[in-house]
Length: 432
Figure 1: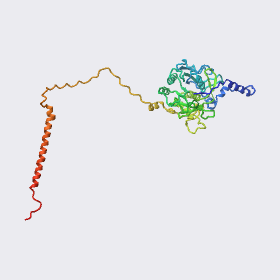
Figure 2 (figure 1 turned 90 degrees about the vertical axis):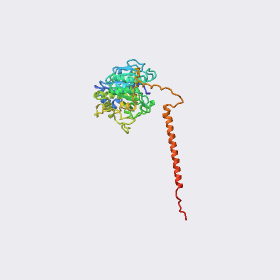
Figure 3 (figure 1 turned 180 degrees about the horizontal axis):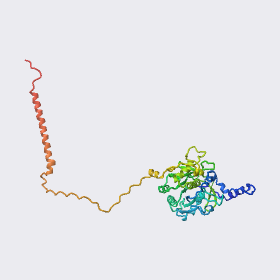
Figure 4 (figure 1 turned 30 degrees about the horizontal axis):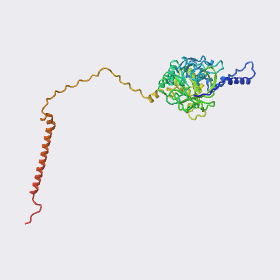
């Protein structure tokens, strides 16, 4: 995926000057000045995040970010990451060293949108779930990695589950509808262990016209992107029937590995916003399983103004509403509304072939053959044997005698008929 980036140091300074110039003369009880960085995080107000914070900020939850690694340079992230590992073969064991050339900051941007801590009361960038803990699992998106990408993701998924992840965020796409069978077991392992998996839908700007794996895997919550007006983004989103919900994907903020603040776009950023909301829901409702967490998020989404059907291929069930997801009454479900991976595997993967029989070195037991009859004494070649008399001479003689008797019978019958005709009286009377 490609991203639009810009370092915000100058923009933030300019915004600070404008806010200072516009501020009234201080009184005895001055109003607290709005932090320009926090003010740029429009999704906190417009998508109900601040309202949800009145109930929870994600305490007691863990979000695993399987990406290029969350760097250590940002002050806002120092206490956020509590563990990690590398699966690329070229990172550091803790998963904190950024992987890749052009997109090495990608994992840091993703992690900051999910759970950045800010730099003080109302200052600095803050994530949707600022009290959730992060796991940094570094993977390599390029050929530099020494481990195949499919194996990296599969191993990272299992590691995240085994180390207490409540939510797993995957901000990448393979641009193919199908996925390697190795992912069957990895994603099924997450589902069986009650982990919510959030996946980015992909971006048209990067050449993705429709969602690809892992966004096509049943059971994951796939996130599409919208612009500032709540319309499906023309560049920073794609479409597909597996999209479950939409979130902001344009004019996003992100903290780079070295601490720089940038503006970027893409469903790679929309996904961690929803991952943060999933952490808020799990924190507020610890008794809910993954299926019901996902169900609350999609059933409390607000249909987009341009949305004609619910769900739709552009918006899913609508745009996220963090406050409603946390506080609204939603009937419980018994199945994941985004699909059942186990059932899909049963229907579409070939059944395991039966195991071949194990060869044995023990000799097989064979019943003994009957004893052969003793040989008969050889006779003269000029004399008939019992077999030739039985199967040749006797039948031939019987057939010949029968034929002779038939011929004689026919001849005698013919003579008698002829004799009878000659002795018959004439048919006309003789005149006297």
